Image (cartoon, rainbow, N blue to C red; front, side):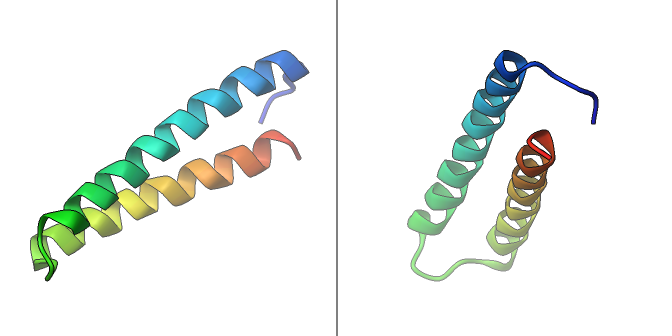
Amino acid sequence: MQKFTNEEKAQIYNTLLFQYQRIQEEIRQIRSKNFDVSAEDLKKIQILESKAKKIYNDTQRLYN
């Protein structure tokens, strides 16, 4: 990852955090629809969790 100023890092971090929170909310909504999660919903959740993990890893690299 390229070198950013602290201000740029803060802006990027805020953007990533917002994206992460939106994904977590999507996951929460899928799980709250039904007591039993369907196979299709489970697949959506897994995709969203994968995206969330990538965002988390991006934030970690931002400060390394």
